[in-house]
Length: 197
Image 1: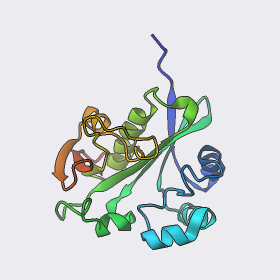
Image 2 (image 1 turned 120 degrees about the horizontal axis):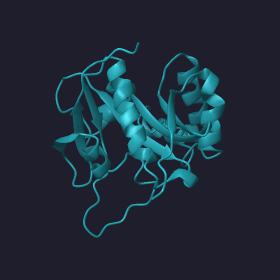
Image 3 (image 1 turned 90 degrees about the horizontal axis):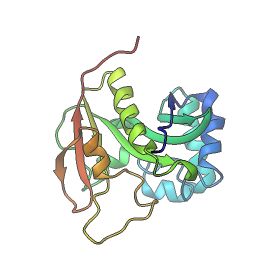
């Protein structure tokens, strides 16, 4: 049996930007996204392209925003999860599929990225649990995710699976709150706020 990896999770702050760049690489994780897909309008995302999305994401980090967590394996940046209050992700509000279920305040987990050498080793699941913990430490009472539900016989590429899988969210205690698309449920987990310290 393979030995379980020891992971460390840290919020992305300006002093960790270089680690994020190293993990994301020149393509910004995927197709120049730089985790801006849910933060801006689609037209803006496309016109920004790789360099513009990188600048926009760096501006969030430099201005004191904490858009997510980095996972480290042996002090090397190896994974990423985007977690923040839902209001930080404006395109969720414009989506017919992922629009709000109700008016309760929620934190959203919208994206995962794991380096190739650490895929299929449980890091995504560990990132999900770390994101829930981080949200609770910052006052969240509800955490939402928008994972991909694989239809029978349909395969998804790693690019399509960036929001995580339904199975992973279920293992982490999430339950389906709404489904307006066969493949994209809204899943929720109630948490108890537990301020850090």
